[in-house]
Image 1 (cartoon, one colour):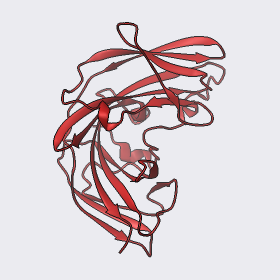
Image 2 (tube, one colour; image 1 turned 135 degrees about the horizontal axis):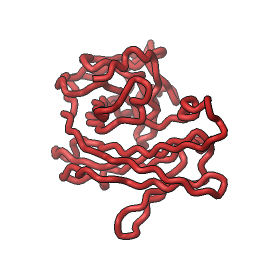
Image 3 (cartoon, rainbow, N blue to C red; image 1 turned 45 degrees about the vertical axis):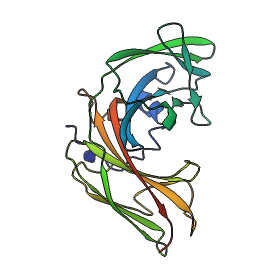
Length: 238
């Protein structure tokens, strides 16, 4: 297992970042793109289900990004940031199925300054247990949320997210160690998009991560294989 703890505090903004350019400062004039496919796993209506999410990361602005599937079907990705360094597609619950994805190559087509580039990702599904959330606690005076879960020991790291009732991201944690069983979302433990509002209902997610076999401390972010997601609603009040 790669020792991600050595990296320090890295913010995972729903696994959408704009930092790929930092890996290419030695050759800033060359356009580079990475295509990433990740299996999402979660329980929906009491049944374990799976879906694929897709990400294209580049070191320069992308005009567009898409994926070409067999049979001439195309999936257009959406820009995740104003700089257009990341494009993505993440499925709704309706896009999840009971069958885990098979090993397959995925072809990304990206346009930069009217020039087309391609990137191929070979996605291999590795199963990981969905975390079991034991408890969620709130302290409004410190604007913090505590979550405790059962560690199933097959995750290689964890991330905690908080969403509002529109499923918009409120908080993303830094990388959490693989042996963790609890976490407190508060100032200094992650990235806050907005503040929590007293009396409002939110969703907290505990995300178990598994990385590709060849992932290293230098590129693990672009080598995520599977994310198993546990979620629970809570009201932000003592």
